[in-house]
Length: 262
Image (tube, rainbow, N blue to C red; front, side, top):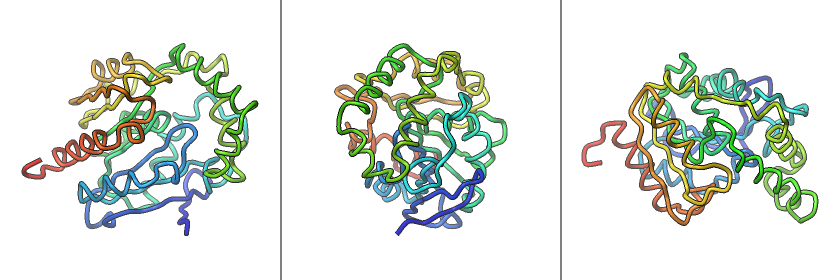
């Protein structure tokens, strides 16, 4: 059964695993551009179990079983999610101490929030396949998946996760990334204000971004940065290399929370 909270003027579906926020810190999972609660599968529950933290997993508006949104999305949609919506999500869920776990677009949203200068709940940030600026490889791959959406069974596969939101989810992500104005999108200005520890996980074979993203975060973040670059891994380390990704995340969280023997 889906649970719901209200944030950003929409009803958002969410799932919770592990301890409540008054008993332990909370891992807050932010999905990729075509993701939702269900696409994370059992990974959040596994990280929660490995760390003793709670895990909040939610679908942004326009995804999964959350409310739809009007299209087209603005070029600044990830800024709004990080600056306006995520704080409301944390408040609505009662999160006190958060470690953000963001994937792709969700990683970018996490970085914006953590570097906003107004993120008192955030104790650490984990990002998989983050984007802090637009690369040609990203645009080319997103254009190809647009063709696949029009010519293959991809819409039916996405409908398993997004239902009535399938068109909204796909077009809202694909069209904004291909908007010529989006080429200038950049969130590097937020990096120096991220003073909490950051873990960056990147696949060597990521078809949507290069190690230049990792290096930009490592060079510009205001706090300590750990990096993990995984061979034989594409855009989704928690699916392509789940055990190594889980181990790295759990170790980072335990160290951040001061657990002896981590």
